[in-house]
Image (cartoon, rainbow over all chains, first blue to last red; front, side, top):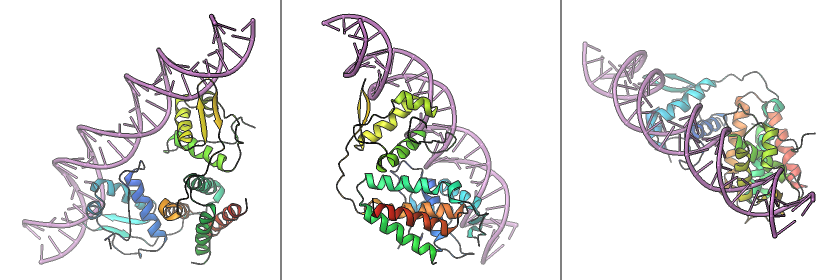
Length: 131
Length: 131
DNA sequence: TCACTTGTATATTGTACATGTACAATAGGC
DNA sequence: GCCTATTGTACATGTACAATATACAAGTGA
């Protein structure tokens, strides 16, 4: 088991590493994998685990702190906050539907069966309705 | 109605324009908005419509051609192909589930209600099951 | 106090996006 | 058949950003 709670990045991906870290950690935070008040790995420790520079991790932490997920302090590290929900935003304005369709289109293009995609989406939808 | 079948890009987005074009057109292609044999706008025409350079559109067309969606020929333009499905790929190997979770996590962080996300996913899942 | 840990700031380097420009191949009128 | 316009392509350039190396500032803890 890795020290970070199952976080994987792909150095070969064209997607920026710092963005992969942000996206991956945010998913874990939303899933409730980290309790408020809990310590996250230091920027240097996580950097070693992932094989990147600590400034790259620091940039990711700054983004998450900006979103209200973390509190950063020198000498202390990164602490998970009890995040307050922001003002409700409509799906339409966020563009979630469009992004979802594009994600599905990519999967279909790559050969993933539509039935499998439908199952995954239905499962996650159910999980969201009853948390 | 615009000549491209409802394709919008955001020049201010950090996401590369050529990638937005690829993703948007691919979604339209998967949705069956373009019939096989049909002509797509020329790289120069679409470039004018979107307000970008024609080489940017050309790069997008090349990606879609690589995926088997289009056939490109000088002097003729871009023609939609009757695309053969590639070898089936498992969802797990594709990483669709992880990307989906990250997309949802971003929406939740931005304040979109979980119920709204669940509805959109359930609706699209249903549409995929009965095409 | 003082050594150590942690996040931060700045400069540098490589890479990728978008463009400007010129070229090659095809279509269509004559 | 030839000629011109049209279409996609190739290549070089400007610019912005990602990732790093290095040095620094602020807090911790004995």
